[in-house]
Image 1 (cartoon, rainbow over the protein chains, first blue to last red):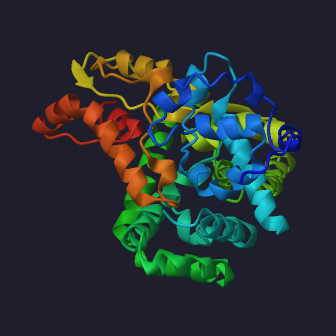
Image 2 (cartoon, helix red, strand yellow):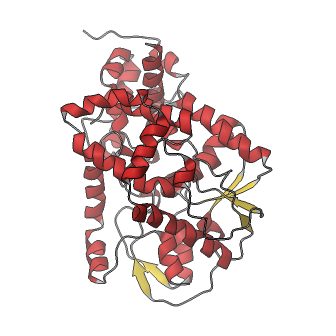
Image 3 (tube, rainbow over the protein chains, first blue to last red):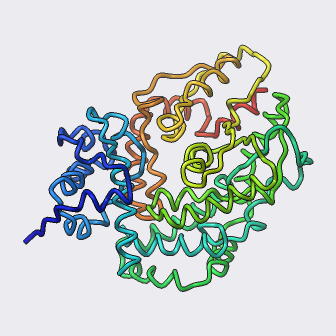
Length: 100
Length: 297
């Protein structure tokens, strides 16, 4: 069972700009990402939108496959800045490790 | 893939203890300037950020990581953070051959020569030339990055530095974009090729240019190396993804997953296949922009 955290987007504001809700999940980012892997980074952004905080922590290793190359941000039609969202999630996960 | 937490905590501890992500003491890494008599002052201060100097050590550590990725040994990496940074760093430095270390300094010597030929007034002070902390930023250790970056920026500010020349895209991005944002200290930053003013030539050569992501997309400087080459009569062969749409070389994934890094590098090379084939036929190989320029001035 997945727990939904309605305040998750608010919690993430400490780690990056609040742009995840701009995303309409078109998938341009996932199509252009050199990883070409399991809907990355679109799936992670969807998790933020629905408040699936635990899902992100469970799958956090995936975040470090991101090369921070910036192609997703450069091509996003909504200027949702997926590259920075992923970087913000890395910061969130690192802070969680260090708190635990 | 290695556990990112093990890699990040090891790199973060190394930077905290030694200012180097690999734990190698600076005097063992930064030697390129020793047989040059560079001035210590000038309009600009040359800051290499030590990235070129780290290259052979990154390659050596990646060879080991590649060997253990996906094996039971990979889980032992979590104990690396308990090892003093200097100890593991000196070990890595000793495993890396002298020739590789010396070769890594050559592009920096070439860059210094190109700047001198272009009559750029610059100085170099190894005590001010420190690692920018960019890997911590990319890995998401924001606190570690900010603490380190503040120390590096403050040292430059205290020395009265206002204008900086950088050589690699990651250090350029860190000092130009991230330092003002996260340390509150700003410098006027130029990548070395922005300042080149070389004598025009008509070499009639053609090369393939790979734009690093940070030069092409983040700093939008792709047109400048092309102008510098054009001035020497060196034209560019067309490839699919370049400039703002350049493809990643896979380098940033080296520490977390060497196999992923290789996979992405393979894709980039495929895009360049025809050009690479031609380059190989002519006996050339992939080389740094500075190496190419120095050969033709």
